[in-house]
Image (cartoon, rainbow, N blue to C red; front, side, top):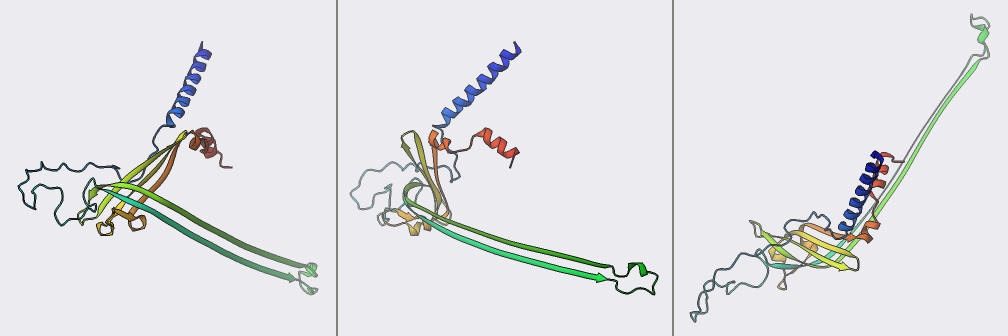
Length: 228
């Protein structure tokens, strides 16, 4: 009976793991961008009846205010133009050598006459050389529209947003957040990603295609306890 119970427990665990794997296809991968990714603007006061004047109290924007984003809930288009390149190389070498030679040639009149003609020689040598190189080139281009989720005390805008693309059997997520200077926002409500401070850009995927490219948990377990 114990054997049957153990077998049932193993099958139940395998079924739960397979179910979790199927559910992970539709799960949203974690993120490190500023939260929340969207914010609702504050409700505007009820518009008063038109009195025939140019100035209308309770209107959404001032007569002399442009349409650039500057409030919570406004949207800004981020032009992703990220390009990074880095290269590093290092060389090192060291060497050391030493030698020692000694002997006894004529010691007939000394108590140590028996060691006459004895010689000794010692030599040591050490060499070291090392070389290392590293290079990285990354390009990220595209556009994503984000939402103003907070207005800082100095007028800068904290923005955050996400774009999800469903392609065949998987989902692709593009996420962005950062701090935007309101003066750099163009009249078309767009800004370059290189002008965003504390920028956090993510490109992630979910689905069985992405999972097939990742190492399984059992393989990671054995790799952790056996690094060779």
